[in-house]
Length: 500
Image (cartoon, rainbow, N blue to C red; front, top):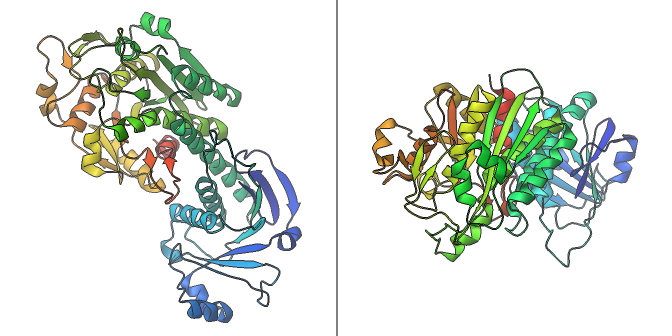
């Protein structure tokens, strides 16, 4: 774990608890730090004879993310035992997201070192955005790339706290922005923790208990148990959860930071998905189904971020939760289920369960909160992975303005979306002989899943984000670490904060 500090006077906070601050004199930094990470551009290499000589010897060109480490007993930086040059590439083209990647690179470059105190110096860099934003993004990258999930390791050692000093001459602005991005890091890490939990750690009741923790940040949290779901007529959620000994829930989290008409976000929370009687038969596929609540995790992480930031926005989150299990009470292929809006659904495939949860939650959100827009996020279909892999989230919407907002938000934080078809000409695929709808189409899996969801939103701008393939990473890359990525927290937070 890194303990982050900044500035002329230094703001110190733990990466995990960003609201614990202390002030230290800047004069203590140079003597305290044993490692310097110096951000350099190709232009700066050429402007500094010593750096130029060292870089030529090692063929270091300061490309974005490139590193060069050396011991410097006789350099201008002789107070440090180790110097790491971290290339920025062309600073004119540097974006805040690319700055966060530099922070992630620094964290990984120092992961195996014994350095206890690191100074990260970006004073040679002049990006096309503020120095305070640069420092905050660097710390954000360090924080996310340093994430680990060790809860179930019996031999885990106490984590060493290492001091990371970030130097700036914009103390007040940097302090504020650092706190905002520290809250965002917390939200991402919460989502990662929830996604990484096994099914015997996170199930509807324990997820709901985790959500109740947001009350401490000033959010309003309501948990609907099975009786409340029955009273509200949310038959689709009840049907999916009926086969489990752990009954379903729906969590509603409200952050009312303004009196504006709210935005609504909805996250699929299938805490484990066996496929039901349409059982998943591939071992690697069913093993990944502990992450089938990654959409719910992203929504809860977003709400944590907004509440921690005291964001001036009005947002309501709905998180339907269920285990899709096999038992004598489980729903069956061919069953007819009545959703909250009164529509009847013929169950063609019990493994198309996520859209059932979302259907009731979407309808409930529109009817009870009258939002100005609704966005759901879900690990919904393998067809989406076949279309755009993990490079993009699939975006489905009939509202061009909402699509533009989500595209812009995704580009800003590099959780990019790709618009895929959502057309009523596909409706015949959802036509049932014995009910109002089938729960699956016959050909266009990702699009008909989105079109199914559209039937439960009447008059509100609506978008569906399919993050199948985005929720897990098999390696440490970019801001992600192996396992749960927390994908969607940064995207949804950016959208909420910038939506018109």
